[in-house]
Every structure is written in C-alpha cells, then in structure tokens.
Length: 492
Ligand code: HEM
Image (cartoon, rainbow, N blue to C red; front, side, top):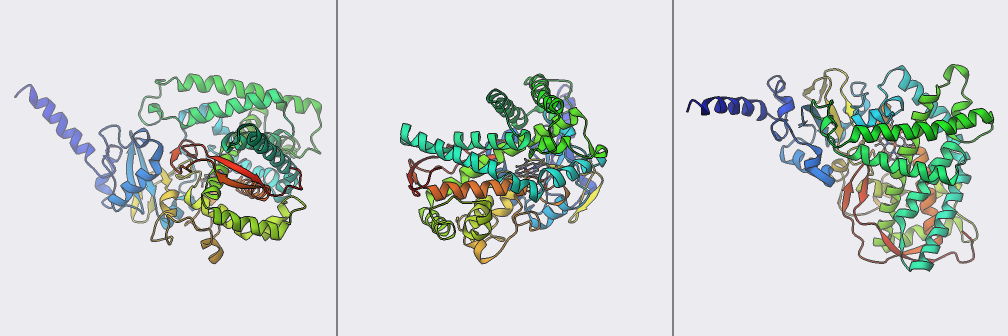
C-alpha cells in the first residue's frame, strides 16, 4: 500500500488536471470558464491532429455535435489551448474581429520563411505593408485581367495534354495535368518566364514544402522545441537554403538586367515599387515563395473536385455546356469577359466550394492576441482558434439538403463567397482573408469554361469522392475520365 500510495496520488492529480472540458491544456482555466465545452482528450497529449488523420474536419464536426458545442468547442493540442467554431456567428467573431489577427506558427512554417511573408507575419506594420502591396500591385483587378493571356495559354497546354493522354492511354487522369498547369501559371505570374530547369526545381521544392508543413510534428504542440523527432527542422533548413538560392538568384538576375517597369509579373511589380515601399531581397524571396506555395495546390485541388462532380452529374454538365454554347458559340474560346454571363458555371463552382472546400478548417488557424469573449466563453490570449468551414457548409440547419449537389441553390439565392457571408467563406474572412481569392476564382472559372466547352467528360471508372486532408482537402483517389471532343472545328 505504501508503494502504491504515491502512484495513486499522482494518478488523482493527473485526473484532476485532465478530466476538464477541453482537456489538459485548459486545466488552469476551466474553473473561471464555466461555459466551456469540449472533449477531455488524452492526458498531456490532448486531441492531437494525427489521431484524427485525413478526416480531421469530419471528426472535429462530430465531436462538436456530441458535446453540443457547435458554437465553440474547446480542446487541447498537446499543451496548446484551442477552440473551434462550427457556426457562422462565432466564426464571424473569430475571423472578423481584431482579437484573432495573428496566426500560430508551426516550426516548419517559421523555418521555411513564412514568418516574413503575408500568411504568418504577425499583424503589425510589416504585415499591413505586405497586404497593401498585395492588394495594390499583385492582385489588383488590372493585374488579374492582364494575366488572362497567360491563363489562356496554360489552358491551351492543359487541353493539349488531355487530348494527348486520351490518344496514348484512352483514359485521362486529370490530377497531373492540373498540377503542372497550376504550377506553370503561378510561376509565370510570379516571374514572367521560367526556364524548364527552374520550373522542375521549384515544383519539387513546393511538393517537399507541402509535406513538411502538412506533416504532424510533436514539437509544435509540446514543449519539445529543442528536439527534432522526425528530422523536420533539418529538412526545413535544407529546403529554405534551396529556396533562397533559386528564388534569390532569379531576383538578383532580374535586378541585374534592370528591366522591370514594363513587366506584368509579381517580381517586376515588387522591383518597381516606390522607394519608400521597397522590400529587401530576403523579404522579397519569402513573399514570392509564399505566392508559389499558396497558388499551386489550392487551384488544382479545387479543379479536380469540380471535374469529379461534372463527371458524376452528367445532367449538370450538360446544363453548363448549354450555357457555354449559348454565350460563347462554337467558333471561339471562352474568355474572361464571358464569365459574368455564365451564372450557372459560377453556381457550380460555388456548390463545389460548399461541398468540398479546399481548406475545410480554413488551412491556417488564428491566434488570440489578448483575452476575448467569443459568445459567452472567455478565450485567453495565446489560444489557437479555428473555424470548421466544412461543418458549417454541411449543417442542415443552415443549408437545405446539405449532402445533395445542387448548384441551383445559388441561382435561387445569391450568396457571396468572398468572406462577407460566413455560411460559405472558403477564402476566410476579415483582415486576414485570402488576398489571392479573385485571382484564384478568375483562374478556376476560365479553365473550367475551357475544359467543358472543348470536351464532354465521362467516367472511366467509379468516381470515388473519398477525401484526404493534407495541406488542402484532396480527393483520395485521383479522378480518371474519358473525353469526347465537342468543338471539333476549333484548335486548343
Ligand atoms: C481556390 C483557391 C484558394 C483558396 C480556397 C484559398 C483559401 C485561403 C484561406 C481559407 C485562407 C485563410 C484566410 C483566413 O484566415 O481568414 C487563405 C489565406 C491566404 N491565401 Fe489563399 N486561397 C486560394 C488561392 C490563393 C492564391 C491563388 C494565392 C496567391 C497566389 C493565395 C494566397 C494566400 C495568402 C498569402 C494567404 C494569407 C493571408 C494573410 O494571412 O494575411 N491564395 N487562403
């Protein structure tokens, strides 16, 4: 008994710390937060993302429902306090107020220089400066429309790729085609032109970066920052060295050439900023690298989901094609200027963003910069706050028949997806809303129009809609289709 006693006392203390709503990380807060709801999780470990695996958004939604905590659920990520909202009102409080204007930064993101780029820079003077540069020079309506020629050329290349794969294999796997197309598009938007060698090198670096950031890392959630369990820090150091080399070299070469005022790309835009707005070389490398990183997979992942839905719902595909034929005819290609006259195509994109948001947990979380009330719950400074957009867009009290793919719902009701309506905010909302949203949508709308105008898309096998959450929410099984040419008189 004397041997057992210390163990029993230790166990009782552990239970006392652990068995509180929200779990271990909330141990010293639960008494002053009587409204708190959430799972206890495991002692010390809490409710870690790797236990939730590739369907974390669904598991968190189910957990919130079972704890009657859709508005705000507390949980523990190791010893990090976290809250998650699955309700538009509390989501708005988190995303749109000034209290959650920073992001918690993972070790890998810091080492990969994202702290000096828009996504993870703390919300001070430097971040505001970057947001202003992005809004005025990189994603201005003028810049987006002047990049249409590039988007059209990449669409031609993708359509040629589709036809070639059809001739060679009979079946077309779209994932590789979309990934190459999105990468080319963003690289040329960023640098103007890019050698094949640089393109291949940057493509590999982006893929390596996705793995390092998406991977679960104990050091992010427990006080173990001095360790490097999975070699993530070592790999990040190596990768950021390569990024500085390759992107830095491209910046230096362009500066040496001294030709940037007439360029249409982001690098030219940054180099021709007024002197007082200029960034130093290493910050420029971080900003450009982030653009490549963020602008590649979001677009290709979303397009693959859209095409999966088009293959699955042949009647809806026919309706989009009828709209295209009526608006564009079959003697020319779809252009940006046609898009306002294609409401059904836009409704299809909205419905896919509702059912398969590329960032179901809005990708990157927010951080409470001071103590703040969300609804009736007091959230202490330093808490990580997330929004489960997937749960909101599948909530039957918000959406009629949420599991049915029905673009018509957006013809009946005009719902903005740009962040003002938290029932459907796939690009986030508030001051940290996605700055690339207009460019992303312009690209997806145009490429979808071109793909559906040129070809009829048919299933090559069962369309598997299983999901896999990595950095974005991907299709678990790549989509394979058969294609039939529609506009036979037109070249790609
Ligand atoms: C379908 C395409 C896209 C989707 C669904 C998407 C989604 C998102 C989401 C959910 C956020 C977090 C917003 C928040 O915290 O409220 C975000 C942030 C961001 N996105 Fe996008 N994005 C897309 C395309 C792009 C593109 C094309 C770029 C750039 C080329 C880009 C650059 C960024 C950056 C830099 C941030 C960080 C903003 C900040 O923290 O101030 N995104 N995006």
